[in-house]
Image (cartoon, rainbow, N blue to C red; front, side, top):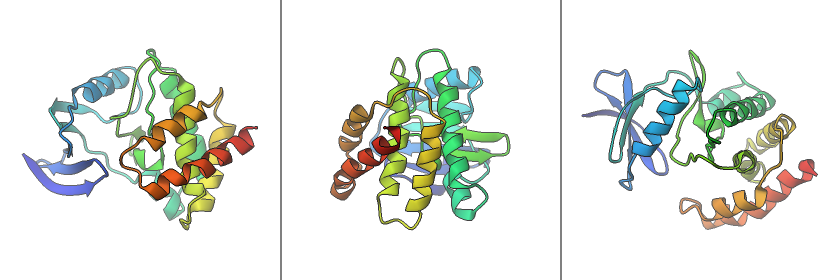
Length: 209
């Protein structure tokens, strides 16, 4: 049974369960959460920071309720600098890519990191894949930051600083062409967001040489 609605994302709604210790995330398109839940369980067993999973059935995923701000909220409030955010994203990517199975997240950005009491925890694993080149994962995160950096958002400058820190701390090549193709195919992007991908890719390539 669902409780209080906590938030609505582009693809899912999140509810507090009646006991308050867990949350239920329900995909509005009815997608199956079994694969995502199984991957999260494997990552937790490997020591990677993900929410504990209680159960999954159809579009519903019940998992640990994390207490703490997102990395994005921490940057906006001033408790973390954009540079610290960029380095933390790079660290989380590097740790993930060290887990056996060539796992990638493909949507790691400051809103998908919760600064919980036990440390940073990565959420929203629906796009995650196995047996995938880590260079695509690094490129997706860089492109996501660059999209904000080239936008008119008031925190675009911070995104640019976070991007520079991410790239400085990210080893290996970036598969930017494939990352841009995947972003352009995302049905949740607006036409304006798709049009901005070219400028975002150029920004990532500039410091990367």
